[in-house]
Length: 373
Image 1 (cartoon, helix red, strand yellow):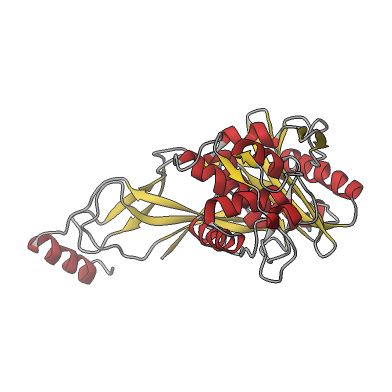
Image 2 (cartoon, helix red, strand yellow):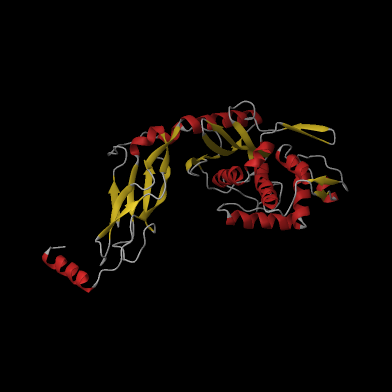
């Protein structure tokens, strides 16, 4: 059953092609609101793509999970194998046979994008890079990354190593939410190891107010990409994009997309916690209907040009059968707007409704006959 409700003076209105107002030259992109986790906008955002070194976010997330669960310490030292030492591409410049503290290896991954550091961590935690990559794929599914599979710990090109832009912003949100201490590393602009100083490639650091992460990536196949985040005036936004053609274009697009994320989108309040959103009919219950309330404050992120196209409907399988309790989820509020996927919010029962007794059931039947119901 669907119950349409009006929101914010909605009416029949033809919105402009507002999606064009979000400008980017990137082939894949996504913008997310951190607080709600809502994807505010995307461009081929759910298409698996070669993520290059942006997939090192998953590598570091795996390590931070081990640290959080006390399975690993920052001071633990891991052995550098010849396999790790020989790996090409960007490097931390670890030396074969050395043992390196986990904290230094994390800095090597996050700041220097070191492929060698990734492999040392993978081999140290899972025995081999292949086993670690398999664990990354399993973890990705567990945390809701729907279009991600991993063949290695580095982002090295492989047909089985893919992520989507939406998965990247989801992962970035989890990094900030589950491991806020990691932002110290993601925001660090340089790191020196073995006498070699390397700068963080993230062009947002020091140039975009509030920026504190996260990761760049580049291969010939993927082009130049970035996962970025910033916090301003109590709000945090996350962006991910891939497929630009140069470091300069990546830097320009990063600042442009994050600017649009903050200034072109707004989080519209819908209902406050406990507010009645609608009502649902109940079959043969002591009450013929029950109020549906918001279990928490509900917000919907939308491009400012599309705000007038907001609409919402209450959806439930009805009429409801009695026997539910106060606070049970019995319906959903589906909110949509021009240019973005709908969001679904749970609605709960304002009170429990028990099954009607014999006379109540008979009375309801007579009401339908004589009342024309």
